[in-house]
Length: 469
Image (tube, rainbow, N blue to C red; front, side, top):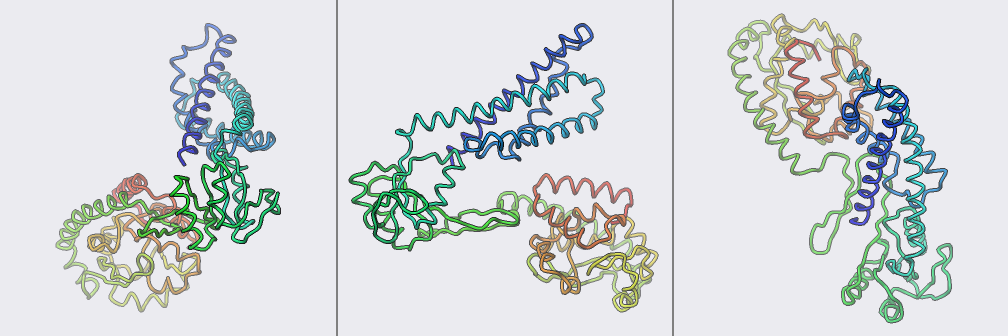
């Protein structure tokens, strides 16, 4: 892991230097053409603060910080073209949004041409240097012994060929069953015997580390760990997992020599989640105070208009199917639930969710509260109780969840919130429930404290303007 990180950092530093040099070269070329009509170099250096992050991000997206050492020249060129096109569009868009009309078009065009040639030459040079270093250092590379079935051994060899950080000299293969030979099937590795023959192999071979397949029996891995520990040799266990559609895999040490391979499709950053909860508590306290003031002002009016309690309670579904009671100010008549059956044909949403812009069940005061979203103030009590968050996905009703398709349930994997991406895309813009699910999943996949802060800021602006969800 450390070697891989260092390699990525070194590649990023090389790319940064190449981009800066390309920009300087483009400036000199443009200056030579325009001469006295060209501005000073210092007036254009701010562009580097756009160029470097954009290009490094695109290079990372297109895989230049993973396997360049073992990519073909055609593959490198293809990825570089896509990187350059994508980065160029991002740069031009950023310049347009910042209204940078004063920037010389000749400078930008020259930079795009020079940087493409320079980055291409650099990538090919790095590839050649890595391959040359591998050939020269073959005798000094880590000597790895595989302890695995042939299929797992072939998979490890593919990883070695693909990832430069795994460069190693694989000296042979130990299999669960006894057997020796010059080559073992498709792997082409020398079969040095069974796993139980590791002590004898260590007597005759120079071994720096042993890589074992996780599919081996626990007793076999235990013997390998004991022998490697005695010799001071590194033991690694190769774990294969299917590709994750969302999220990523992680290995957790749970104690007593036990590990868990976990697939997390929701945020798992404990410190950030703790901060989110603390912010919820603070916001909940402030919100409950405002809720009390609003209740004193509108409670009697709502009771008079609706003929029922000013507080409306409704069962909702929270994180991973937890049921809770959601609180709102009652903005509809007391028989709203029964009347909803007569309004199903007027639903403006496609899917299990119900939404009607000019809902006849809403009272005059209720309409006033809804316009400023004051009807949702009691939900701050749900936030204090930990049933909801300030920012999250929309909390569905039990009837909605009963009609969910399988992929809809993912929006329940995070705590529901007072506001979220769907609310910010309201005003009748979202008519399809699938779009609601997409926005909720987008929030889950990209969650961060900064994203929450942006959503809260936009929500406050929306409330002050009186925009509806």
